[in-house]
Image (cartoon, rainbow, N blue to C red; front, side, top):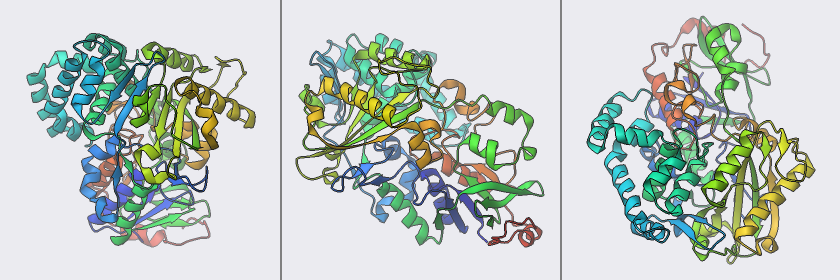
Length: 539
């Protein structure tokens, strides 16, 4: 019987398992899919000669995360690769905003849009450098971050106090207008805000866009060398060396609660797996409280709050094997790992407004990843492994285009939407379509079928909007990994601080379990719940 059972072998579940194993606990991780990793996996499914990341690819938060740094995954063979430039946002008139890990290069790119904008970028960066240690400490620790928060408050006062706090809650459109005369800096901030589900007019999108931009400036957008699954592989190997185990193809259908506490889980085959001390759930909050834990064990107020839980935008992704480099009209884009494709901040607003109205965007904002540019081993020389994703509504009420997309995402609709994404790329890279050797389409239902945490193609574990962050995540009054059931901890991106492949939700849950008052073994419960009862009968 393990001390802890972890539901889900995504990055948060594996981080939690590693930290528990470091503390001397025996740990068993149960994963529904046939391989570990959750949304951090790669394959060769587009073309046998091309490595393609299935879901996530670029990991600035992983590079910044003290949680992952503390695991020393380089000892397990993990290496990081960077593109020559971090990010580019080209425009149809030939201009291009470029974010480089060299702040002078970034400033020079923005200066070309308007005199003084390079200096304005450097000022934003200087604020970041003053606050960075305490922001990261506060970001990656449980809410409320008392020590980091106190230090951050002192630094905030020195850096402008309420004026700076106002800046962080601004919509990113307004922040860009206040800080930059030209469009370049505004594009970088607003495009980075839409890495989540924050429209240019959303409160707090300015702070998020600034945070993502500064992470890119400091850490870049690195990728695991060889494919995103290399990060997963390192976590699994580290856990195995510490005695933990991962069992794939084991779907957990229930958290077993007896004597008022979580004592194990039940799988789809009827097996009951006991947990001597704790159960940690790397699953979405709606799945944990709406399915795995019987309602009789949960407060009515929590169940009511979860009916208001808001997912982030649905995601539609296309992977390509390309016979050559992308023929960008703006040469600067050829050197960037990530390319944002939308015609200015107004184009981003138009895109987000169409989603808000339930309409499939006609000119989708695309995040385009150039993986061979970033990690040359991803495909043969002279070719490019690439992808793009965009967002669509969860509930489609109409099509902003002319093809009558309904959100059924059947075969026809998948092909139509993939063509629409390609048309958007073609606007900025004429001749792109002529390079396509093969493509793969991942619609929202396909994503969910490959990782249940990606509900409807939502990739962030819930909206990043202010009303579902901090003490409001995943519901008002929570913000921590502890649940109403003693011995059960929420360890997924639905918990603070949310998505981003940084391991903090898993780490927070593990630390809560280690200090929990309910983690002492209970011998009478051990005797009642066997580790391998495949009959499915309750003791």
